[in-house]
Length: 205
Image (cartoon, rainbow, N blue to C red):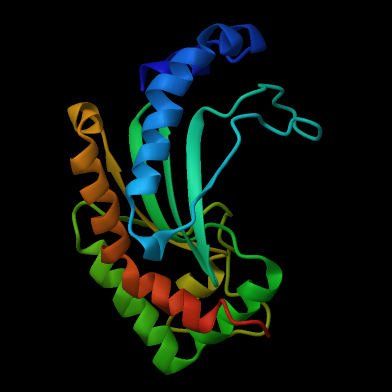
């Protein structure tokens, strides 16, 4: 995590080139080993490049301050990244494209499927180590057009994503076997959410 703290302070090409070997040895290679060790049901993982696309961004920092990877399934992803604070592991959909968002809202509005999602998220929320989030987009102020404002699941209808995440910090990051168990345990813990998204959001219209 020290590498990422320094990168946040000095996000320049000069710093990157001077510390590329350190990144490979302490971040990229351990992450690759962790991903390769995960069960086949979570394979393959796509590792994201560290370079940022700055063409249309006001922030011209050339490098991401996290090293992430994702395994996609219909309607959802299994995701993890390393950054200055440690390891974050997540499942769900960070920001749904329009067609998936339409199917998500239809499923949330329908009683059997919507109640099921509410129960899944409530169960995850009762776990002290899990944080449930609406993802990367700000929820709407009210229920979307076409849905009653007083719908019993209006809070979920307003969201444009839904994820559950856990984090690991400190000395735990040095123990590969413990980290592997933590990642698999998180994916298993979130399996009901991933399965719900597969069933109701992932299939094509």
